[in-house]
Each structure stands twice: as structure tokens, then as C-alpha cells.
Length: 228
Image (cartoon, rainbow, N blue to C red; front, top):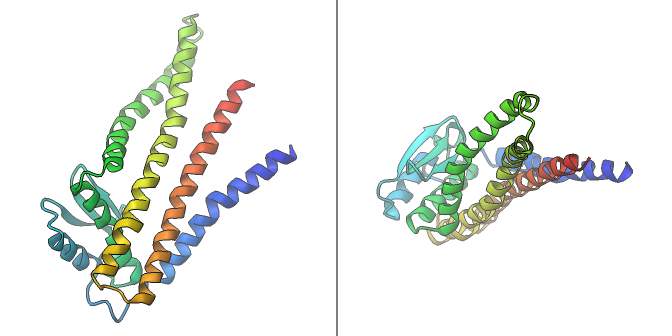
């Protein structure tokens, strides 16, 4: 029992603290920056033109910053779209990093996109199966119902783990192999601000690590419950 409590405490620390730290870092550097001449949207448009990202569009959104590889859209949150803060500029550089991955046919991004598309279908199947099987169990006395229930549960708990683990290399590459070199080689930030940008990207990267660990823990709890 004591070991289980320690495990929950460690999980809380590993999964919650990175999110709190990321939120703190992003808010800390969300203030206007006197040496940055343009907003997040303007910077994004400049980078799209500079790197020849033909077919890639920019959109302002209230759904959070992200790149949509299916629609070929870099979506920038309202907080970053009209700001010239370090948080805004670094975030846009990261999302443009994803667009560069797409342009260069970066395999992990292609794999994650395909996985997410298939996962949506699989999750629907799992949801329907988990709702229907309790009704079918008393009506159909067959081991197949149990197998369907297990498969549905595994999809519901296991697919997020696979997606999160596939997300890690994609996000780290967009941040540290593309966004940071982009900011440095383009002389968009001085040496001090480059260090801050790296800190911002690291804080965000750790939230992906925390999400992966959390999904792994949920899968472990589900598998452990099945053994009882």
C-alpha cells in the first residue's frame, strides 16, 4: 500500500510539475519585446515565404497553437497571433518547424498523422463496443464477447500511449532541430533571447514527456486491474 502511494505521488510530480512550469515560463515571457518588430502572425507569414512553404496557410485560432498536416495550416492562438513576445515568436517558430517537417516528408510526422487518423476510427469502435458488450454478455454466452471487451479496452487505453510516444520525436525535432536553428541562423533573436527561447521550448517539450508517462501509467493501471 505504501509503495502504491509513493507511486501516485511520483506520478503526480512527474505529470503535473512540468505543466505548471511550462505555464509559468510561457506567461513569464508573454510580455511585449521591444527588439522584436512584428507579431506572431507576421513572423509566421515571413517564415512561410522565406522557406517556400507553398500551400501552407496561417490562421488565428482559439484552439491552441498547432500545425495541421492534413489541411496544411499553421494555427496560431489569439494570445500569440498579435503579440511580439518571446513566447509568441518561439511558438510560431516551433509550428513552422512542423510545416518544414511536412515539406521535407519527415517520416515520424507522417507516421503520427496516419496514426491519429486511424486512432479516431478505432476510438469510435472502442466506445461503441464498450457500451454494447455489457448488454450482450447476458444474452450471448460466448468467450468472444470477452475478447471484444478486452480489445476495446486496450484500444481505448493503449492507442493514446502509442500516439504520445510517437509525438515525442516529432515535437523534439520541431523544437530543437528546426525552431532553434531557424531563430539563430536568421538572427531573429540575440544570444540572450535564444537561451530564453530554448528554455521555452524545453518547458513545452517536458509536457509531452509528462503526457506520455501519464498515458503509460493509465495503461498499467488498466492491465493491473484485469489481473484481479
